[in-house]
Image (cartoon, rainbow over all chains, first blue to last red; front, side):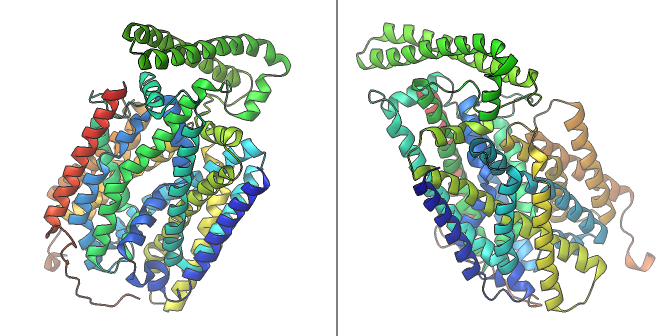
Length: 566
Length: 45
């Protein structure tokens, strides 16, 4: 990091804190602190929803995912617009009219206190696990690349986020999210333009896309259905829709965003804007990863992107095993580069035979590069590194710090920290809201003053911030963090989606039925996770279906007694 | 705390007349996005 990078980074973060504190003035009642006085316009809610969902993991891990596995991850978001339409037609008006602070509060209106309490606890468990991952992603990567201690990085981010979230509540969270989202979009655009500009002069953008496509990196859609394949059109449309329904309909970190809306229409518009903007944004981020892949066709990439492990396997006793792998890697890289240049030359000179020949050599060299990289990862794991070592999360930042010019590096780091702050502030705020409204106020201290609950909300916010920092190391051995965070969500979301589906659409289902359904749903999801190879996107479908079936069955056999018979 | 009662009518959307039309437009948009992604995949495969 050079001086200009530090100026950009510190300037960006300082402006976020100052703006957050400015916007948070007047959050002196529980209504204003937790729901922003229900005064938010649709565009602020929309950008806040997108910023909360787009954590640092999105940029660090998604770009690496695209480098390794291509753009097929974009299919994960295909179900999102469908989910938004369903939520606009159902959950948004229901929650608004019920005048609730949390989604789980509504479950007591519809069922009973135990169903609300169980749903709240499931949310606290799920989001409590995820918030640690949100802090961990940038901290560990920055620690590896710059040598910054990861505990110190999480502490600095944590203190910053807690400072403005405790002070200003949801209003601060929403408006800082807007600012952070604008920084994120600007930073990504600059990063992509810079990468394309850094490609060799004879390689145009179309050539780059042709090379990425030939390597299977632009595989945005796959129609082939396979239960065990994580990303295809069907798992994305169906599984992704269920996951998005759960996330945006049952997760307080999202529901709270659109509960702050001035009106039902404003809340609906915020979700529909997200529905339209999300896929292009994810496509764009994945495309950056694909272009980083093309960049490394012409510049030699390290065998292992994690600097500390890379240095370790090049020294000491391990070096003897490293050298033959590195030699094969360099040889395959040189042949891949030459074949790529031959493809471009043959294509531009209209030589289909030459292009086909070069394409064959290019694909063969690709396989050899991948094989050498896998051997390098195995060497790391076999010589004292992490078991099942993967360096997906280090690819993009390794590229940024090695090749991007002064100023842009600071901007990209600011994007990653801004994304962490926007996600974690929303998560902490929602965890505090559920803790106070659904647990503390409902079960421990009813009927206290507004000031008391406001203070309790601030204390809970500080507590969850401290908790997130303390548990930030949870994701250390989870491989791709973007997958890890979605897998954690999928372990719990199906049950929540099931119980809200029962609440909205099954009038005869009782509180006991819904409660038993949630327990059965969780059992089914964990059974699928532990004993089958089913892709995690299907857990939401499985959990939801089991909750509905069990809830309906229990309610049928144990119907609610009319009041005079109780 | 929140006001005890508040009339919350579902206002019409600012464009396309009804929410039903807006929802249909989002679904059509999704179909077009998937088609574009498929064309993108085929074009550069």
